[in-house]
Length: 344
Ligand code: PEP
Ligand code: MN
Image (cartoon, rainbow, N blue to C red; front, side, top):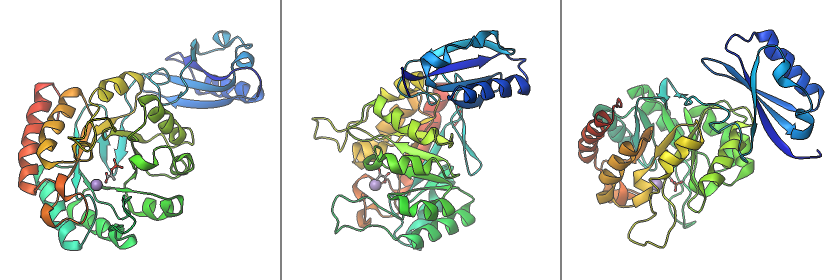
């Protein structure tokens, strides 16, 4: 491609017809550009990707149904607010994430056994969590540490879903496991260590389940949004971001929770953003304050590690809340949400 490969947004009028939209999509394809159609509640916008000089040769504003034409200068396009002004709402097994109500995801870091998972799942559900977390594949710093139960773990999560009615999120580490994880989980998670694994991102963009993308611990917000774009541009528009702390010079916490990422991302992108207070602070004592701060900052929800006996946990016991502590935290979450006019 010659010239500047960038994108242009063609904003349609509210009364534009399907034929008006098809006509533009066809003309874009004729000139070798890609057309990505986004149907909003009020109006449709068409993202035209290709050589901007070529795209701009056509008088788009004179086409029937077109309201205006806006160039996008950001390196990420479809996840940006320029492309879609309204907040995206992602459906996770019947639970909406984004767009108003606050969602709490909770559960053990890793699935260890049926008893451990079921005890946690029932407790977090009773306390008000809507989505269960639990991993079958764990990215561990040491290759000798517990790596997860694999498919057996996914089966237990599916049973816990049957039992409680809660959809679940689980991490996928490798392209070879995407089909397996996707066949069980309601929401697939890409962890911090894989945020820049572009092959994995594109591949989860081509499967049907929604994806939670955690921020890499050395990634800037722009790098993170570009990573989300890798998923989105493959056709999977159900992307949820999750801030989980970044690596700084401060050793008192496992990572430094970048609370400003919440309002910054809200300004730049229409995607929902969650906060993981457990992997940020890395210490149980910090989880309540970080959770309250995340809700107050406008996050669409939080994802919290809970374990029935944190002292015996095989993974991340030091940051897991006991179910009773989680129940107390849920009361606080509801109170903070109410104070800022949100439902929890
Ligand atoms: C996790 O949520 O279990 C996890 C491994 O988090 P992160 O990828 O943010 O380190
Ligand atoms: Mn963990």
